[in-house]
Image 1 (tube, rainbow, N blue to C red):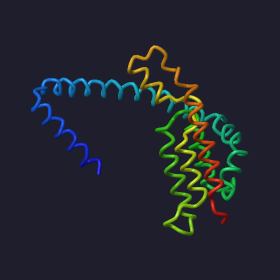
Image 2: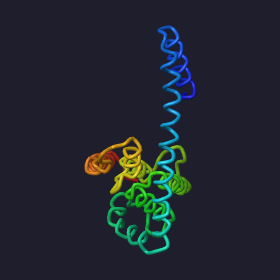
Image 3: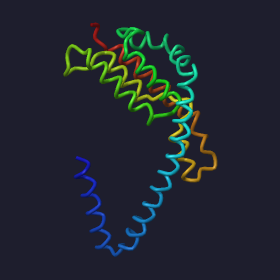
Image 4: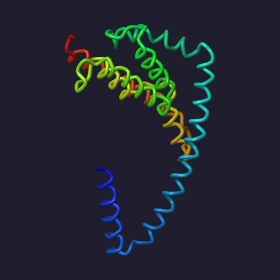
Length: 191
């Protein structure tokens, strides 16, 4: 759908610019946007390399397993129907650790893998299980200690204090998680 909507917006904007005589402004904007996109991509590349490297170092040490163990009490409350021995449990833990560390791009493949694993055990393939729904809520809230993506964007745009976003992110993500989890727990059907 978006591949239809965006070209329509672009065509309408360009026709309007021709009509009012602002074609040069559109051309300048196109080239400035391209430059900004490349600058932002390079900033993200550096940030992703840094945090992916840190995540790989953490995997080779015991840090990831310690963080996953620290999540066990929360995992038991959020996902009571998934046991510690199950493959999905480890995948969900890794996804949550990646999100907490602000590694959204690293968390995405882990989240997809966890959902695929949970779907294998789902008796009703066209309906989400309670654990799958809760996992989506947790990922949507995306609790982060270090919001690396937002900090990278703010840095690339020349912010004087790119880390000033940390406290508001903590408040927003914690609030979203509490509201989402509470609502889900209230609405979930007992299996």
